[in-house]
Image (cartoon, rainbow over the protein chains, first blue to last red):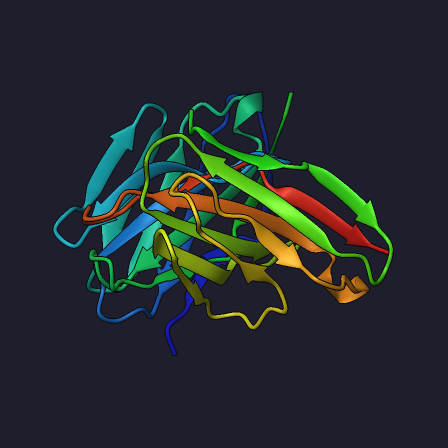
Length: 114
Length: 114
């Protein structure tokens, strides 16, 4: 069964600290993996996409990694800010085309305290 | 910032009422989707459309219906709302013919059926 598991379920950190969120998947075949950020009361917004051949990609203070062999991805947030408080959702696609299906994780709820 | 709009943002209604959740996008995207999201759970696809006059049911069985008469408009209708329909409904769109597609989400409608 194709699944996407995220950990931890929730996380509280102090402003300025770093943190790492995990995503493990069993989706096969694999096309790409996206990390979305969902602020409270808003829709998810794409942060970054990882394809099969990519190991690391940065977007400002966000750095995503992908290990396609172990089917694991991580999202590292550096020097956290209060505005980073949100749910971070991992989404895996089994194909990059119109026929592709998306598999959603349940998200990690991150809270950044001042 | 995504140009996809959902109304209303919040809706509280009584059992048995007919409701329509509105979703419009100004990006000219062919593909549009409706997702259902409950707290702490993954997004579930309930309907999708690949263009005008094209609608399909998603993975999660839903008593709602959708229509796609215009490219920019993808409303969702519940003929007779029940408390089990209480949830957050997210509309999304993406352009056709793009690999590794990115979803653009609206801000959602929080529906409460009493």
